[in-house]
Image (tube, rainbow, N blue to C red):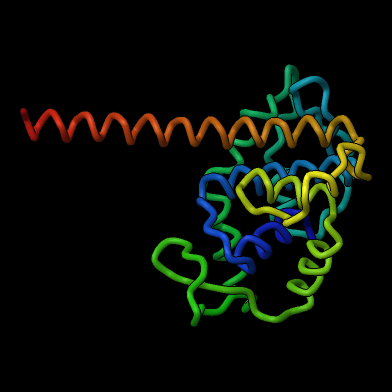
Length: 204
């Protein structure tokens, strides 16, 4: 299991509407955090520095590692998120459907594109649910960035939670947050521009 796959499953399993663009950026961040954990990369300032080449059993993790920039000055984390994140949520959905881990959704809680889907009751889904129930800090932080609340009060949360004392992980989480905020700003700007264009044609 990977953090990205857990995040995707949680995003579909809970009653939250998550934008594909936001989720794709968070999935790219989750992959990068797992690559850090596997020793495949390190973070130097805002750059991703390739490390060793460990065996990665997960297909998406392998693709992410293969796409690393291996020449100085290396790739900025922000640039990685936008490049790797392009259509990433759709790719995860297609892979899970192909593996029989998703099924058409009858009750209809989340919509990814025109098709409503939900996770099948698999060991992977149960592991993701257990990780979410345990409020694993990295998963909870990524989910929060895309608008999925872990339902704890502020008093129950701690900046010193295990897993968030890693400077590299914290740097990636901050970059994901900034990228999602930038995407939202782009959406708002387009909405304003479209409204202004419509008013122009509507006339006084």
